[in-house]
Image (cartoon, rainbow, N blue to C red; front, side):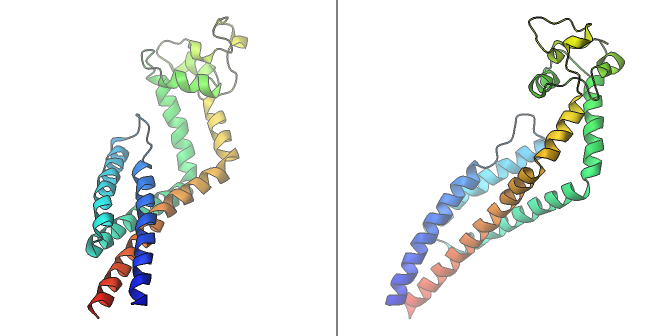
Length: 215
């Protein structure tokens, strides 16, 4: 009888922890509107599976909890794979960032203000510097988003625009905050693994509780 009461207490505790975890996991896909469709699809899948998992936790069905745990392990493996790829191909990422910024200027459209917003927020201009706009953009004109003071700015006067390129600013930011970014990546990767352990532990204790009741 004592073991049965202990199992009930443990199950209640694990259900609460897993329920809290599932809420956090359900709210975790914070992707921007410009995220690739693949990432949006994965986020939608996480929301769907997490919503189903609420029912599994409440009903306490061991088989479904094991399946949910397996899904979380798969998410952990994908996160770990993405992290390993980012470390192995960080030099390729730097070249890709430079090429991507260059292509953005080449195909610049004033009606789409994505790059303009980035330049204003990061206080940078062009890829390497402001001369990229005169060399690469279709308009051959430095945009207003490069201005130090937009209320009093003549882009033809180069002292009125940001002197640093966006590639330098971005790489400097990533380098200075590398430890924080790695910590966030590790935390994000370990989150589904923790959920898998909770899910499998809950399923095991439910099975044990049923076995104790039969005996």
